[in-house]
Image 1 (spheres, each protein chain N blue to C red):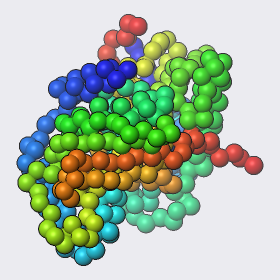
Image 2 (cartoon, rainbow over the protein chains, first blue to last red):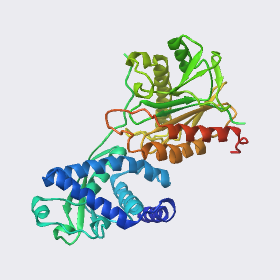
Image 3 (spheres, rainbow over the protein chains, first blue to last red):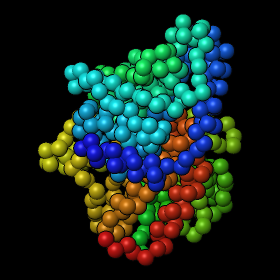
Image 4 (tube, helix red, strand yellow):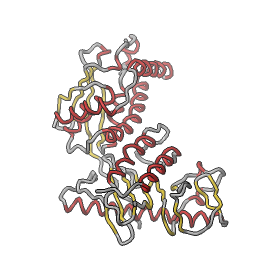
Length: 187
Length: 212
C-alpha cells in the first residue's frame, strides 16, 4: 500500500504538475510572512492568519490532487496519512515527509526534513521569542484538505528547524469523521 | 450521435450549484423568463435575446444555453431577491438530488459498502427510462455531476470525469474568488467555466457515437 502511494506521488510529480521556479515561490512566501508580521505585530495572530491562508489553499488542493491522480478515498486514517505525505506533499512541494509517532490510530506526525520554504530564511530574535511558526501555512493546508475529505482535524507545529530543533514536525490529530450531509427534508 | 440534454452539479452540502440545459422541452427556466418579462424576449444570463417563445429549445446551434442559479449580482439591473428565485427549478433540483441520493444509498447498501461518509463504493453510474438516461459521477470530495442524455448512450463516465478533472477543478476550484465555506454553498458563476463546458459538450455531441 505504501509503495503504491509513493509510485503515484512520483508519477504525478513527473508528469501531471506544472513546475514553477522554487526561489520565486520561496521569496513570495517569505515576503508574505514579513508583511503579515508588519501588519499584525503579534506573532500569535500571524500564526492564525497563516493557518487561515493555508486552509483556503487546502480545500482546493484536495480536489486538485484527485483531478491529477487516480486516487480514490482512503479507507482509514493510516492510508490517509500516507496519501497526504507521499502524494500530496510530493506533488505540491516536492518533498516527502515521514509519517510517524502514531498514537491511538488517529494522531500522527509528519516529519519534514527539507522544507523548501525554510531556504534562505533566518528568524529574528523577536520572532523566536514570540513563538512564530514560519511554515504554519502548511498546517492550514493539511487541515483544509482533510476537511474536504470529511475528516475534522487539528493540525499544529511541534518542532521547527528555524527555531533550532533538528527537524520540523507537524502533528495531526483527526478529531472526528464528518458525516455526509443529508438533504433537508421537506416537512 | 450523442444527444446531451442537461447537466446538474451538486456540491457537498446537497445544494445545486450549477444547472444548464442544451436540449429540453418545457424547461422551468424558459417559462420563468417569459412570465417574468411578459414579452417574447428570453433572458440568458446578462444578455437579452429576442427569439420565438416556443418552449422547446435546442442550444447546440451556437447560442449560449441557459444557466441556473444566478444571483442578483450577475444581472445588469437591481431586482429584488424574490423575483430572481426560480422555485420550480429549485424544487426540480431537490427532486433530482433526492432520487440520485437514495438510489446511490440503496446500491451501496445492497453491496454492503454503505458508510456514513457517502462516496460511491457501490458504483452507481446511470439509470434509464423510456425517454432519457441519467449518468452520475461522484468525485472523492463529494461533488456530484448528473448528466441526462438520450437513451442510446451507454456510458458517459469518461465524459463526466473529464468535466470534473479538467473543467470543474481548473475553472471553479482554482478560482480564488470562488468562496468555499463549510456552511454556505456558492453557485458557480464563472464565464470561463460556462464557455469551456459548452465547447466541450458541443464537441462531444457532434463526435461519433462512442464505442463502449
